Length: 283
Image 1 (cartoon, rainbow, N blue to C red):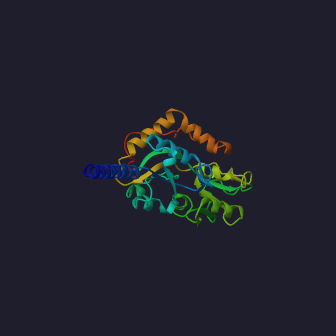
Image 2 (cartoon, rainbow, N blue to C red):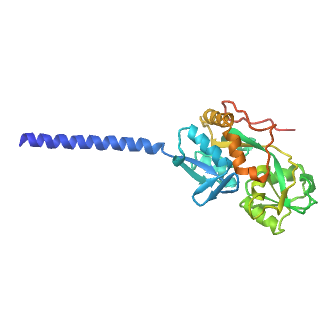
Image 3 (cartoon, rainbow, N blue to C red):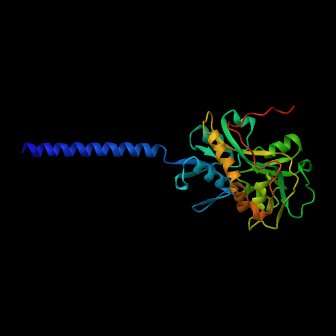
């Protein structure tokens, strides 16, 4: 009887030990199981949600970087990151990083960090195919110009090129293109690669055109919470993607059909070990 009791107690102790060990492992795995990456859901060729699939150049760079950081694709949790919400999403811990045509700027660097850039775009204008009035940003006075709430693109034109331009804000660039097709606005502005993706969709192909007169440079960075220690590893992953040819393959796969050609004087970027630093403001 005593031997049976001892065996029962031993079995209970062994089961308890096993349960604790399993629980401990599960807790450790859960803590680092997923990486939450913010992307756009509405930018064809860059960040686009199609049912359960997420496509575009931004998402392909994000996948490559995540893999280099030790996260397979099934451990990525994609999160929609609208332009107006990106800084808050990083500061509040809603996402771990953001790949969403996220231009590095001094203002943003006050509250978040950036790795990269992984691409340098040029701001341009998208207009209806038969438009001959708009040839560049300085021809927009008196025109209605659409961009997305939270984006810096349209404000730059108003501040530097056409003070009398009428700014129209929409929730997405797709909404801006709908307004352009309906004649409600005269032009849409953002980076050339974004406009190329929009203009090449089945609904818009042949109906819209890029003016082809880029007038700024936009450095797409990887948004990170302030004080991040991930910049070195992320930059190393981006450099590797470039060196192996995967960076250019991803660009061609996602926007090559639009005829878009990246600026080879600015791309691909060559990165160091540190986060992006503020630049001196031009006088």
